[in-house]
Image 1 (cartoon, rainbow, N blue to C red):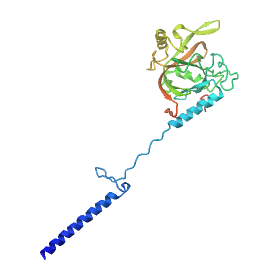
Image 2 (image 1 turned 90 degrees about the vertical axis):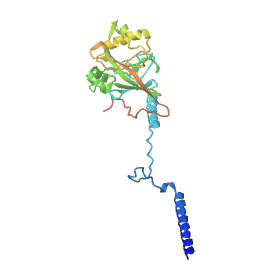
Image 3 (image 1 turned 45 degrees about the vertical axis):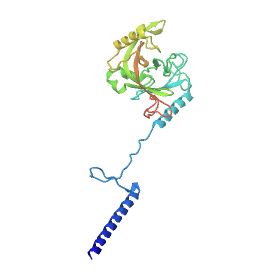
Image 4 (image 1 turned 135 degrees about the vertical axis):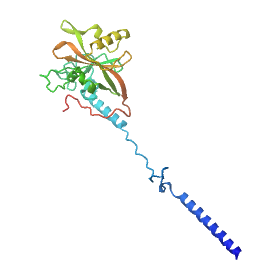
Length: 285
């Protein structure tokens, strides 16, 4: 009898072992998605969820800026880009011709006479010039009560309290967007000869490229005449953007804004510059 009981216990033990092995095999064969992850601290039990990928706006932005450029180029082959401020103080198209007189009193879209003319790049400038100069008219309040026409809004930068909000400027070109920071705002005094105004030797802001030995002369004159300290400087190694407009009641002066390039956003199959509405600011609102 004792031998039979011993055999029975051994048999039951073997059966239990087989059952446990079978259960283990079954659990290992269950699909991974049916299992749950238990955090190391065992404070909660939650399923593993992969985070949603961030949307990629690069191709969409590139398509938008390409279309904007191509639409303006279709209006006028002389269109070369748009100058705009981060604050939208100015957001306006720019053209370029074989001289600096054609668009002085001509509308860039209709090519008809326009007292306010068009914003135009100096005819000697190229996209790779050391200094890109863009001219735009200043309109008197009696002509333009809105104070938005062409480069009229640049008069706001004569006051230092308006600098911080308007210090960042962009230039959209065919294949890239360039970012600039304003370094100096000053008045240049012109020399009159036979009714024509010329720049002084030390203040030749309208040069597409500088000789290095002359640049220090120009730089020092600008810094000595700037209307206020911006905390920004520019050097011979920098790529500059110079904006010029007239000064009310002073035909012998021009307001000059010197900007230093700080970034470039290529426009290829994608563009990492944030999407923004490109609307001529003088017509906005």
